[in-house]
Image 1 (cartoon, rainbow over the protein chains, first blue to last red):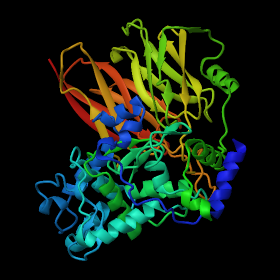
Image 2 (cartoon, rainbow over the protein chains, first blue to last red):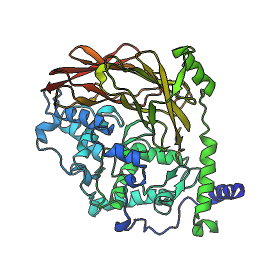
Image 3 (cartoon, rainbow over the protein chains, first blue to last red):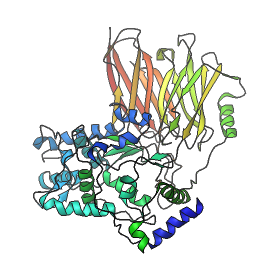
Image 4 (tube, rainbow over the protein chains, first blue to last red):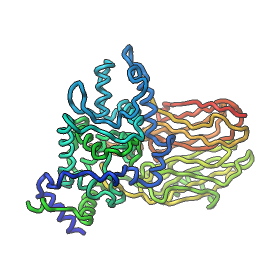
Length: 258
Length: 155
Length: 106
């Protein structure tokens, strides 16, 4: 075992930074499985319990924030009085005002700065997590459905490129774990397919709710690569690629993950 | 290098390589209590009073995939009447940094001596619950859970 | 603003044993973890939970650092009379959060 491990390290050190794997990285539609499928029965039960799932602490709080009025500015509810059913399942998407790709967090902050006269909220702040969770939860059960055509296509390509590129001291790409080796054991875990359909999600490891970008940063750190900063456009592009790769899978935020 | 073009991870290499690297970087640096600490905590709480095994049922999942939040249920066989009830339930660990996990205080108005919460477990261990009855008698029960290690530990 | 979730039946029959669940948003920082620079993250935990039924203490709990983040408790009480159940959590510094549920007993 020892020399095999050493061998991988040596190969890692000398391998080029890009894999030559064909860009066919998708998992066939009939094999798509949410991260839920890779959890123990107890963790699945926690997600399924609409009271005990701790993610709902953030959903509840997000609902209050959504309705609250900051000074004289409109609340979220003022514009979105019918809620945002199914909206989160179509993010990330192009922002019609700037032409740039934005995720749900970016869209919430755009509303704040453009329509509410409020400063943007920081990534992983309790308020942004809560609003994101409240809005994402309204897409629960809806199929992930993003548009990667037209001006979104270059973002998709950027996300795909990140996904298949080896990085970090381990010299591993996302693809190598989550497309080529899902379902296999890695220490005590079963490797998932790496979908983002449950995010923002309550991770037992975090003991908190967290964004998909926090998860991406953990994956990058896990392979001993330098994670990108929160909100980095490349991570938003990865979110788009992940959503396209999970197209059709049901959204299930707030999910519970390991 | 040519290998990079054709190199495909097989399962064994994948597991051996990534597993060993993760282990090196994730050696925990936490202090652990021991069985002796658990016994000391028991003595601090109950002196040298006799603790009988039985009447207390501890339920934990057989495997916990993360030690940060493990569901725990404790049931005590008691009629929970004004004259015969559980006064408190104490939860103890032989392996956490502190042996005492928590205490539940019940009354005849609890109706049923059945309590659940979620606890932290720093590794595989047998969690012990001690019930103190209103007459001062003590009963205990325990259950062991395997706490598994995650694939990618980010410290 | 700690979010609190309570599960208490709206109605119950007199003498019925009812199940109660109480969940609060709190990190329950154990004091045993270290940050990315090796510094100890200070302990910050809830230490006490109490449930009062029309003012009478019916259940309480003392928490240590091994109670999981966002602590949840499931316990029971006998439905005795129509009124209020008060749930109160107090942290190590004395800061407290509480919430009330009403129950109709017939």
